Structure formats: structure tokens, C-alpha cells
Image 1: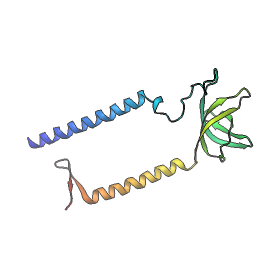
Image 2 (image 1 turned 90 degrees about the vertical axis):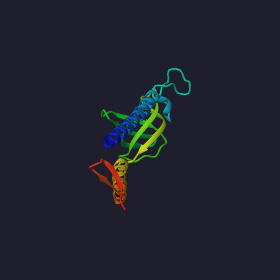
Image 3 (image 1 turned 30 degrees about the horizontal axis):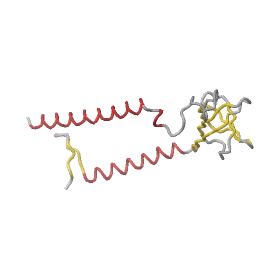
Length: 152
């Protein structure tokens, strides 16, 4: 009877945590554009009529005196006019607008390095391993009662 009470209590706690997590996810998805740091694509640039911002992203394939060219996810070459210093092979996200000469004028450039994501994943794996080692040094899991017990 006592074991059933503990399982019901744990199940209820898990249910409450899942409801809280889902409500946070729904709140973020409904208010996505209000959480953005940069203007959302499609908004008017500085109130200029007929001039709208767009976002493009891709790998830098050429460097020019007045900017650079990227190859986007659809394998389309896009020429970007920018003062941002980038290197060939970097992944960039550019917020800007298209000029009449079919050159993309940047407002904001976010630069990602080639090795950035791999380093982030590797760092996270090492952190998780260290956390598990420390946790299981002081705690063990008792399968009979489905609880973590502190080691003595």
C-alpha cells in the first residue's frame, strides 16, 4: 500500500513537470516573434515603403572587396554587400534587403564558425559524462523501490 502511494506521488509529480514544460513550449511558440532579438523577416526596413527585410543563410564561398558571396541551402549563390569580416567556409546568417542591382544589402550578420557546432556537442558530452560520474559517486539507484539512495 505504501509503495503504491509512493508510485502515485511520483507519477503525479512527473505529470505536473510535463504540463509545465508543455505550457512553456506553447507560450514560446505562440510568442516567437516577440522573443526575437533581430527584426523578423518580412518587416519593413526603417519604415520605408516597399522595402522589406529578408534573412538568408549559407556557407561563405567567395570574398569580395565590398562583401562576400554565400551558397544557401538550395545551392543558390547570393552576393552580400557587407563590411563584416568573414572567412571562406564560415556559416553566416544575414538579415538585410535586396537592392535593385540584385545584391543583398546586409543589416545584421551573424557568423558561425565551421567547427562551432562540433565543439559545442563535444563540450556537452564531456560535461554530461562529468555530471554522471559525480552524481553516481554520491547516489545509487535502487530498482526495487525505484528511488535514488544517497551512498554512505
